[in-house]
Image (cartoon, rainbow, N blue to C red; front, side, top):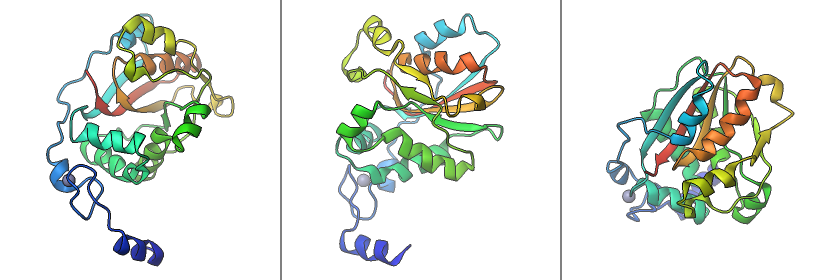
Length: 221
Ligand SMILES: [Zn+2]
């Protein structure tokens, strides 16, 4: 640990965002209570999309249910700016999910620049950059967000969700040529209905990737 970091962490030791115990932002005791997702959720917008794209292979890897302590940690991360949780989330993903060796590119659901400005940081990008280091797979921002949408978490109606995410994403022209025949890991922090993921996949498949592995921290059913 660099000296300055060492001094700072001894002066301000991290406290668990859930139980306040000193030592870690998400302590091992609280991590023990994590509800791991033991099934692959059926994401309806995704199934609909794939009806016509049967040749595309899709895999889904989600760490846990969106319940405490994981949901509490994610909320602290996103809404209280506790961005130092990013390496802890990346480690949880890396330790508990199996990442196929043939993944070519890691990418994330992009945040609209306006939202990034509000929040001060891009929550998915920070986690995925850490995961990219651990897995030794390059991170490339393949997608950009073109439409500023309201928080989908507050929108329960499926049709409204689909409408909001429609045409909300576009390919990042800088990396467009890197997609064909590649296995892409697409990350989002919390998956609810899957409409955001479906909207992103719809854009990615125009460049004919070989496989897409969806990865998320939590599933909110
Ligand atoms: Zn704790």
